[in-house]
Amino acid sequence: MASLPDNPDALYGDVIMDHYRRPRHRASLSYADVEAEEFNPFCGDRATLQLRLSHAAGHSPSIQDVSAHAEGCSIIQASASLLADNLRGRTVEQAADLSQLFRDLMQGKPLPPVALSELGDLGALEVVRQYPVRVKCALLPWVALEEGLRKLGRRGAAGG
Ligand code: ZN
Image (tube, protein in one colour):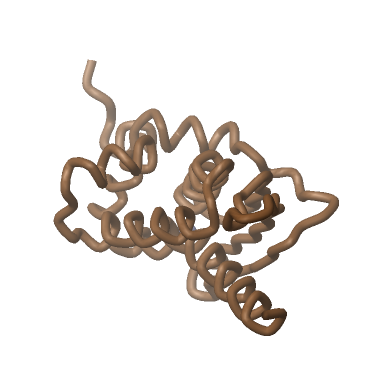
């Protein structure tokens, strides 16, 4: 039986609806090395991100724990949950690379197959490109991530 076109499940697909209904890593962290918040006054979406890093001597810091909390439409909530799910265990540089890849995907840049496999289930959000006003919603948690990483970079530079 064909789904009705106004059914959001049919529009966005299973991965997005699953993360929307059961968002992962939503609880805030008691301690965070990085915190950032982004707000889109146009649609009222808000994304709050916290990262806890682990520092091992001789290695660049990696992301030990993530909290991503989003308020707003189904897309920002799904995107925040997918982001959180995909950051754990990555180094700060790998997180920045993933963010750039995701941005390229959402902006319709052609990506090599290796990049698509790197994105994994984040690729499910590509469908949002069919609804251009929602692309901003999908990107907002990633804007928060980039802002958080910038703050971290500045702090690192200041601390030597
Ligand atoms: Zn939205």
